[in-house]
Length: 332
Ligand code: FES
Ligand SMILES: [Fe+2]
Image 1: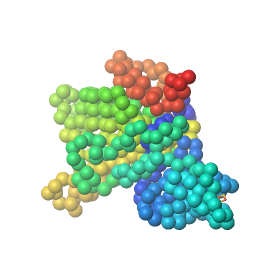
Image 2 (image 1 turned 180 degrees about the horizontal axis):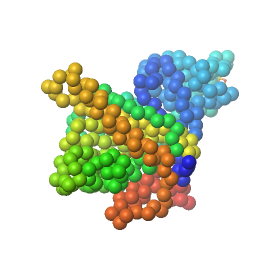
Image 3 (image 1 turned 30 degrees about the vertical axis):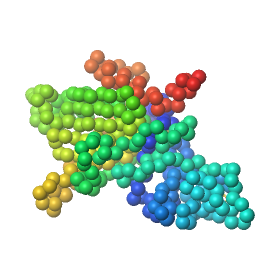
Image 4 (image 1 turned 180 degrees about the vertical axis):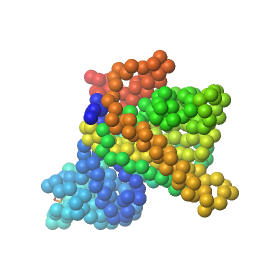
């Protein structure tokens, strides 16, 4: 086992659940960033993510906490907490406790996922969680795709940065994913908190072809370290989301989602099972990466081939902005 030496408390958006796991009235338990948390859905449908322990005497709100209209009621003494983490009722006193506050997290629901904003300094979100349809500006929406297919792997000894480094690692495609030839990168933009990587790639043909003649590729948008979305072109139309969320100091949960494009005019009875099969193939490819990541030891400094130097240096420098050490030393 090789515990990642990188910070497990990075800043950014991270997936903590899928929306359909938390119905109205549900209180969903989870642990991320070494914190016990609950996500609960009010009657209005609004979702709140907060730390799990009641500020009164510390009951865990995930064990018997009850959604009452728009607030969450503690199972121990009935104190009620608002969506802002404020105490709004002590059932046996005239006044609520106005001083204590439950820690809540900024939350968005997008592409069927629940994303929370994590920042040890508690700054407000300063970039958006990427949208697997909106990020590519081509007017596509979920209606153009078959239902989302999912992979969920929990408590793996890896780090979000390992997954993003795939985006500059041209050499692994041939060995891990059996592409006939090595892909070539056409865009690396690491200038902002959201970064962009495009590459030309093919899974077809033999090793005699030239990458310059290939007419298919992938565009990727990385919203910080936690969420990456991709769009494929020139091959089976698919979109993916990979979301890696630290659980504690040595493990992460991995979620991977695939959408396969609908082809207008095709018989849906035949097209849907094919889409499902292709989606499973994309998930299988991603599992091959997971097998590597979950056993690798982060290499720093790595032994890079000359052609790898630029990409890895760029992504590793970019990643530093999300780690608490970076801004501690800036302030230092
Ligand atoms: S511990 Fe929650 S109300 Fe007392
Ligand atoms: Fe990969």
